[in-house]
Image (cartoon, rainbow, N blue to C red):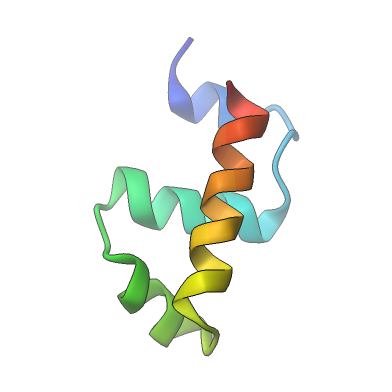
Length: 56
């Protein structure tokens, strides 16, 4: 099943979808995502890890 299809199934929160998309699909570095969102890179990393767990 394609990643984009899994992301649209409502499994992820809006923040997880956005962060996962930026990191995996658009290949944006975690620190850059954190800078854009005004949060820590650790928070972004944890969010992406949680998203991966939900999708697997």
